[in-house]
Image 1 (tube, rainbow, N blue to C red):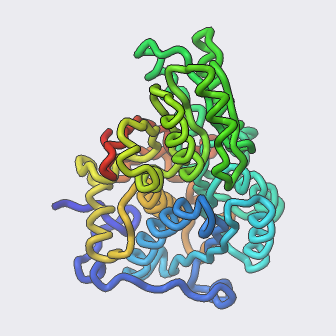
Image 2: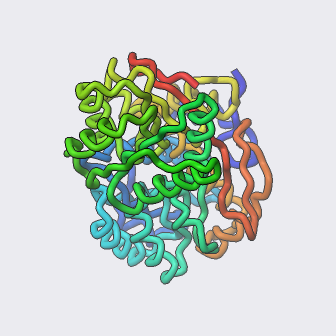
Image 3: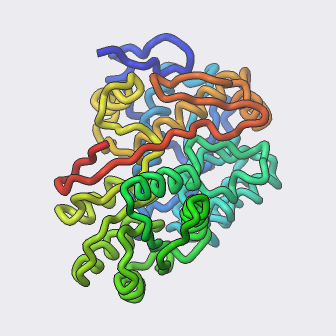
Length: 384
């Protein structure tokens, strides 16, 4: 089976190198003192109700970097991640970010969530440190343009436009929104509202849940009473799963749509057979459909060097984000600096990572606008 080269824009990785992969994370204090290392700082949820998002994204990214490091890294430098747990809470994330910046990280990478990323980006900007591939599609992190911020994924506006287009094309115009009561939820609500406004529609009803909470009783009561044809969910997997179960118990028979941040596999695991028919927008290709070389490369990497990595949309996004960063580092040249990484990423231009189209430049820091819909089958699988 053909595989995408692991080393950015270079020749393929040998079977022996794949098999030998699996280097452990190295303790943070020693990393930035080593001139032959590119140190990335990641604050993410590794505990709490959103933990699987951070765990899976980090696992996919670490898989790529471990295998890349087996071939000597980028321009002779190993890439290492220093990870800190913020529990998906902005205050903890801000404190983690200060610690990571004090350690001299070349970049901040793979932050999980909108409220946490919004807390971190100003600190990164003040320090002149690149902020790369956050796991969020919020427009507040993309506008106004910030030369230090780079995004792999499409925006929540892209995802919600796709969802609303799908629903209205089916004649389902009565659309409600269940959203997290924070910047993430507002970003998703704004996207749905914008897409509906373009069709002279507005949300049928809205209801909220607090971040890191599964107290959905009031939200269920509000939205079930409104009798929408579909409910768009903008929250993490635990609260979305709780809402779906309770809404169905209350007699709701409509459809549920989620944006990608929900965590597809985590939601499928949480719902089990109750997940059948739940729709999720995706910003990376289906990791189980092997029509693209990049997907075959990802699955092959897991088989050969990452047996502990679970293949899913979140880990695949981490893998792609790692590849994007490594390609920018390669183009940054020499002993990589933060400025060199920014310049290297901007030099990527239009390219394909094995069928996944990427475009970056001095005036474009959003690498992909890819978005498609998938559906849970109720047996832990996803159909696109």
